[in-house]
Length: 179
Image: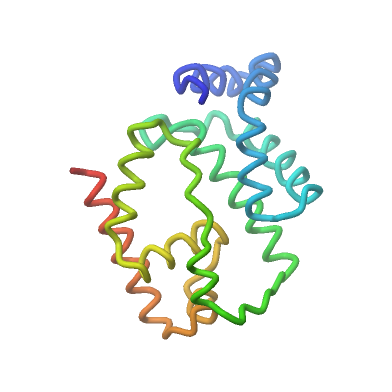
């Protein structure tokens, strides 16, 4: 895991158009961000395109980063995630899920490499306190970028139920992390 202060310093230098700092930032973070893209897109060529697009955005928006709202890695990974989800939506990629319950049982492990160890452990603990439906809805939403409507369709549950699960789970996780 990269030193958070180092990444913050490099990103600040990028906001002043320091190309050497950008190269260093890329070298330190690209493997983790590529892993985020490949996990969502499942295809190397798409993940590479998303990563390139994300780094262009990172270069152009470096001055918009606010350290009080989160870490550099979390900020950059959110850019990658949103770009990857945009690609999926543009492709209108649809998959038929014959067994939604089986799908939920095999969700990927939350990628804690983007968080510091203390935060990662706290988040893992808070997620484990959610009931199965709330946790799984939240994880599917996070990992696949599903909208409430898409989740309702995938899980064969009413839209209102899905909205409640997501809202309650986010509130519970926030409350848990604040303790």
